[in-house]
Image: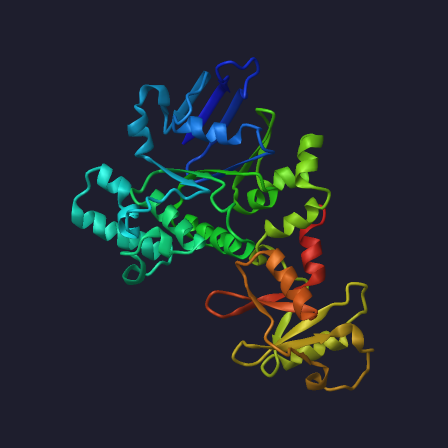
Length: 372
């Protein structure tokens, strides 16, 4: 969808290139995050893609077309743009802000009105509550949602996002990151996303392009960047604790739990067999216990009991003070946080329809990220 071939940028009066020999290919439907320190050229690269800044050398292709053969207006009307400052028109209502590009593209009124409602629903802003308000009446997070809705309104195949969540408080920022990933899972736009935050890059990107002094020093998946940094600069950028960042890359459904789960009544015989055949190990295994409606009851810590112990199954069960469950689409980082905050030995992994699909222990989490 986007390809840069040997692209360079030298500003007038400068001897050294701001961007030098940049080669980059971004596939259809991918989020590519440009990350690096201030002044490395990541924002310049983004602005060259939509001709806000002209490139000095090389060729930039968008959807197979050399952008030098396309007018800036035509190019930009097919690219959504979201910036940190949001850039809403203060004198426009929210619905008119969202409708800006469809109006420029001469859509009919009924189509525009329907699209505005669709976009507000997508970013979870109630139309009746917010459509007629001005941007000053919204919170920072709400204005950023409007910015995303406006960028998506004309259904562009490409979006450029320049530090879109950088000015928000940490809680709002995390919520909007999650919300945007939810939206992207549905719409699958090709996105170039600029940030200086490697944690945000790891969370948001399908691919990460690490830039340093105007050059691309590494390009790959978040897993590639974290596990195989190409040089000392990339290693310093991702940090010495980069293994911890890998908890954010995997989702709970992607790991195979080491412990089993059984129903207390209908699978009682199997529970007895597990207890009787148990051999103590250093990993302190447990088994999860469900009721007959597949709802978690608690767990049995196998290591607490010696062979021949006659304690009943019911008395062995450690019952949760509060249900410890996590959606199977949550990240391992989310599961890690749940285990730390609860102090329990496991958290139940649940499907969207409420079925238990296993239990996750701390040992499972460490095994999932260790040496992979």
